[in-house]
Image (cartoon, rainbow, N blue to C red; front, side, top):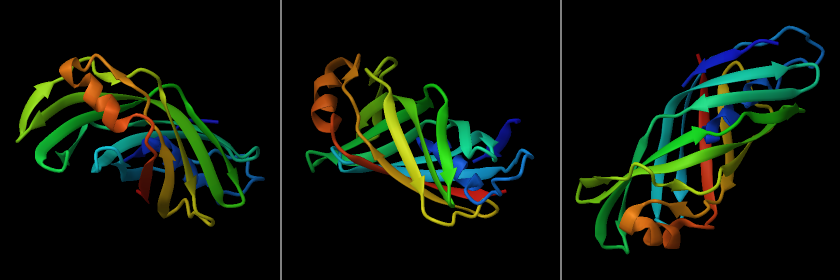
Length: 197
């Protein structure tokens, strides 16, 4: 088995990269290497905001005989804008970092992958005036699970979707309570698009 380097989940999405092996021949003992551009987005339900994800880089390791996959993903800091309480122009910068390996399975052309991520809010502000938050992060890892549709083509790419909830945040200065009020426990959909290199 050897590492599979990809450019471009996500969400988490490393989970997305696992999808590329969904149609690989189970009896093949040879490792597979495919590179992707990975982009996506997630809706932060409590804020009424959409957060873009990527482009990032991903690494996948697969056992084609057993149908097991593991991987990692590196996503850049990203920014979203929304109207707080429906009236106040607000922005937030967010950094999502993988926390431990992602793992999953390939079964009958469908990939299921999940992993834990650290979510940090690095800046909040109003009217494009930002306040850095160097230590504001979720108090627990965020579990993200992603699934491909049937017949995912690893030579082309495709889309993985899923959802997750956010735990409480800490060390966000005066914004801690309002952040927790708005985002904790909400169901947030996520989508990752892969494009093979």
